[in-house]
Amino acid sequence: MIRQAIIRYLERTGQTTLSPKAVLFDMDGVLYDSMRFHARSWHETATRHRLISAPEDYYMFEGRTGHSTIDELFQRTFGRTATLEEKESIYQEKAALFNQYNDGQPMTGAAEVLQQVKACQLQTLVVTGSGQLSLIDKLNQSYPGCFIREKMVTSYDVKYGKPDPEPYLMGLEKAGVARNEAIIIENAPMGVQAGAAAGIFTIAVNTGPLPDQILTDSGADLLYADMLSLAKDWQKIMDIARTEKG
Ligand code: MG
Image: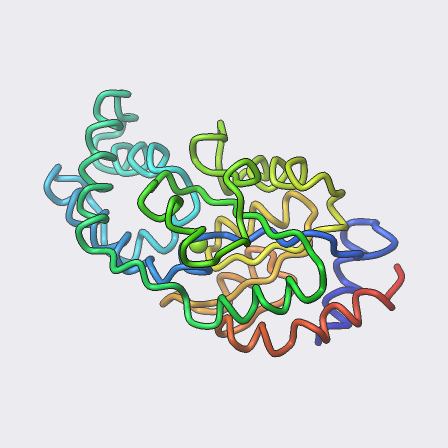
């Protein structure tokens, strides 16, 4: 399964090798078990503003910036985009609710994945569509020595955000590596689309309620049910990547 995935990646991108030097981690749903709190605070905020949505929508929107989510809700409800003022105040409201609900729990198995990645001497970076400073600032405490702020890509750094490849291309630049020298770990369809569009080997971990098929259709090269099973396979992925040539 891993070998076939790497061969397919090499064929698709025209690269001759997959030589990992850096791992680009998404944050929500990968490093933190925070998606249900995002979905809940988004849905409550939207409902207060009479914006049409269902709690599940936010798992499909995951990865895009807050402003882009608000535009989408305005489009479907009122047939127009939101003004900057509306976007700023609604996002602030959502962020405040999120801070109230979120328990800051790291994702089960994420520390084990990081341990494996570090043991392989790979760089570790965060590439998130989030602007929630409460979590971004907590990364160093949850995962000591793994992520430094200068090498993070957040909603404050990007113009388009996921599903555009932009955030992951910025991640490559910050890591100083080529696209075939990185691996992405993502849980969201739009994040996987961004990774695939950037030409980077993208591993999906389905930590939420969406069917696996959505992540595969979005372009995931490999799919795991949780971070712990990815940690168990990590060395195998590295060994196969090092021997497979396109
Ligand atoms: Mg995510």
